[in-house]
Amino acid sequence: MPILAIDEFAAHVPKGATIAGIDLGTKTIGLAVSDLGQSFATPRKVIRRVKFTIDAKALLAALDGERVAGIVVGLPLNMDGSEGPRVQSTRAFVRNYAQFDARPVLLWDERLSTVAAERGLLEADVSRRKRAERIDSAAAAFILQGALDRLSSLRP
Image 1 (cartoon, rainbow, N blue to C red):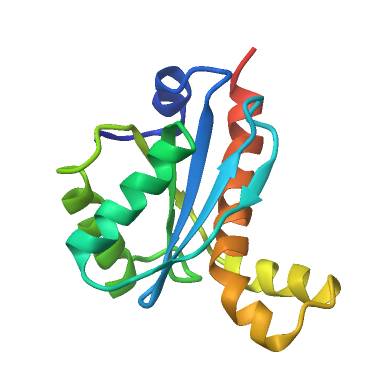
Image 2 (image 1 turned 90 degrees about the vertical axis):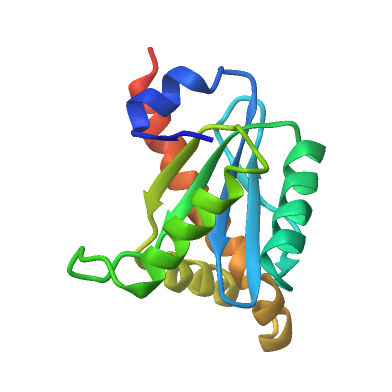
């Protein structure tokens, strides 16, 4: 699973294929998937984290079920753009996950994605309990939508 820059990612993921967005949390993995036209991101069910091998197999099954051609992983940079422990953890997860999956990966700046997802769920009047269940997948959709918007501007 190569980690690619956005222009390389656009060249490796064919138009008409789905792309997944992933928000890696400490307790859950938020998942979102694009439509075939790669225009809209839709949240999917959250994967509860257990241990790496179980998490990787659950993620692989979910991505295979959606026929995903490429993966956008949220990179939790600090607000000043620097990399902290969460970025290192995300990079380690992606490196280790490469043993299970050969799909291309794009690391995407996810600063404020959870805040934006929370606001969207609040505006939709989602209860506190349901927000807690959906926040990671909503953040994954926000991350993926940003990447999809950028990809659409790169393609003719």
